[in-house]
Amino acid sequence: MNHIIDYLAPAPASPFFAASALHNFLSQPTSFLARLLYALLSSLRPTPRPSFPPVRIVCISDTHTLTKSIPDGDLLIHAGDLCNVGNPAELNAQIAWLDSLPHRHKVVIAGNHDAFLDARSRRTLSKPDQGGGIDWRGVHYLQHSATTLVFPGRTLKIYGAPQVPALGGSEHAFQYARGQDAWTETVPSDADIVVTHTPPKFHRDLQVGHGCEWLLKEIERVRPKLHVCAHIHDDRGVDVLWWNGTQRAYERIRERGTWQDTYCLIDPRNWLDMTLMVISTLKAVIWRAVWGGKEMSRATVCVNAALMENSTGKLSHEPIIVYL
Image 1 (cartoon, rainbow, N blue to C red):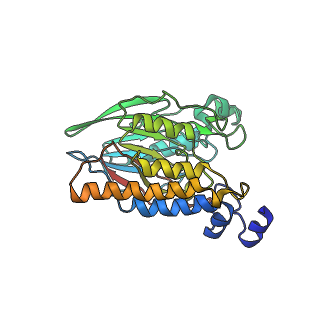
Image 2: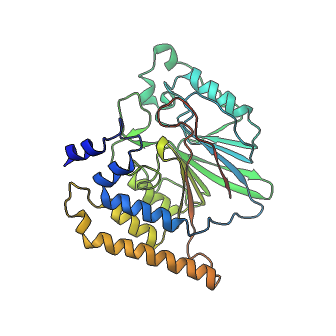
Image 3: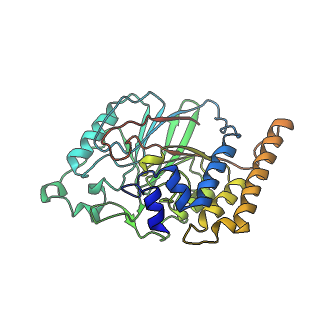
């Protein structure tokens, strides 16, 4: 079946590149339909209202040594991959650029291309680069750590962690074996914002699902107001995670088979879950519109903030602004 799919709709050059709609449908039909339905249903829900006074947060990531014009805001968050090689020269140049920006606070985590910041991947750099130093200037660098920042009338607790499911050789930083639990009970329960390089499973991680299932569970446990991630350049954008029946039904469909599981399209569980997605969303919309009900649970705005488009070497994507 795979060779037929590749003949009709060739796979992208890399699994980290977005595939065509036809390839996605032929290779994972139920996931393709579920993603379309989830996007449609999500468009019916308003984004969570910011607190008062709101904090303007500018989210960027995956700049890979490049710079571009960044809109002003109260807080700038960079979710990793400042570099290509990951040596001190690249890091210090990116930090100097970020430090020059006018935002009140700047928060940065590492990504898999920031080799110097992980003792394991640092060994793959040249000997002179292994002994270099990093000047973080006025930038808050988070590595399995948290900071509390003060804004006019507000404080926000931000936690950052760089680890990603394994994707390549030892030159990639902060890798862990795919399927390994690298997240449970690592994020402070009172974190307002969580910054990771990898996205959570099934959200902003392409149809193939490059994200981490354990991170998804940890984000659900904490339910921060904002989760900033990136890593997957071609799925830049915003999801709102409502932690409700719609989302759980969607994730169950995504966990099930592809054409390798020939039962996927006639599996009644998939069609039942798609029906549940519609019912759950309509109930929430009616509850809010007709009776003015408040949301039953705390939502998380999930932002994939990658600026790099594909592997073009161009920062074609724009920063994403969130009011919290």
